[in-house]
Length: 385
Ligand SMILES: Cc1cc2nc3c(=O)[nH]c(=O)nc-3n(C[C@H](O)[C@H](O)[C@H](O)COP(=O)(O)OP(=O)(O)OC[C@H]3O[C@@H](n4cnc5c(N)ncnc54)[C@H](O)[C@@H]3O)c2cc1C
Image 1 (cartoon, protein in one colour):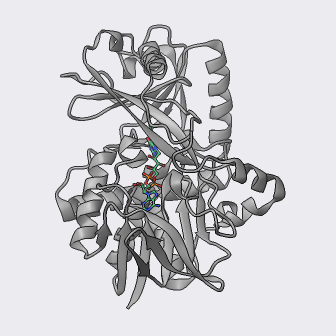
Image 2 (cartoon, rainbow, N blue to C red; image 1 turned 135 degrees about the horizontal axis):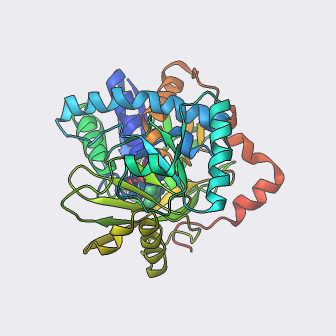
């Protein structure tokens, strides 16, 4: 039986393990350095699933990937809920993007144009229409964009569900087991070494998120960069908003159990997961600018996570110059949305050697160019800030 070793038990490693184990005929092991799975960026995420809001510069390979990822979400949610009986709080409430300043209005016009040109579902709303849809929104709103296809779920429940599903399907998870280095023989990765042992595998998949560059001795170490994001959670009895509501400065996501999530920041501060006063103040201000009554909610909690970013903000997916070694990392702001699709892509490569998606924009070989190599060498190692 073929063996696959997955390094990293975040949402990407879990989704891949579930996909492989479901297809069957393969032995799957996850190595996770923490004592719990999914305890990094994957459990810090807001859980917004909106391809067009997260495409960096409009149409292109990232948008195509995000759209393909979005189509897999409903069946993944249904399968995991059916198997584990965990309610993932999955809904498709739509997203309102607000303009609160003149500059915001210009950005809205730009976004509307490229999204319509790309054939995406989007609608421009006047201020009165926005307030009719979401009465709690500030009366300073000048207008908005509405995308009905935006979905959301609770990432922590998703991790629990994936965790149970992989266990039920016989995946072995080695917790508190940080991989130290890859075992390389000639031009092939044959396994992984950790502090008290080694495991050998036909395929090793690096899903170590922002730590994916942990083995600098490889020909192309993964140029993963940690990008800290902070989140506030407000406790409340009644929902304030129905949809995901955002401005260029903040977003609000209502969970069905009453809490309201407000995010976020993108900070390049190395592997520092601290929650800072400055960021919580900025997020709070951004949230109040959208819905002023947030300011009167008592009781908030805050957390931070490290998104796996890359020098060009695109994920790294697929084969490497080393045989038997695949990478699935660098999902930056979209790892929850892209997890099921990533699992499918990597499983296809393992089972059939090909993927139906064009992965050229996401190949690790794009980082071989000289000037990018320079940048990679300057990236912080684990523990550095
Ligand atoms: C504040 C915030 C909000 C976000 N909101 C959203 C959102 O709304 N929608 C969305 O789609 N995405 C969102 N994201 C992004 C998403 O969370 C990430 O893209 C995704 O979680 C990345 O998953 P991952 O498995 O690659 O990384 P991680 O979750 O970081 O998992 C990597 C795992 O690898 C383990 N590991 C690392 N090194 C080793 C090693 N040497 N050996 C063994 N194990 C190792 C780590 O301990 C970790 O568990 C958000 C992120 C943040 C921080």
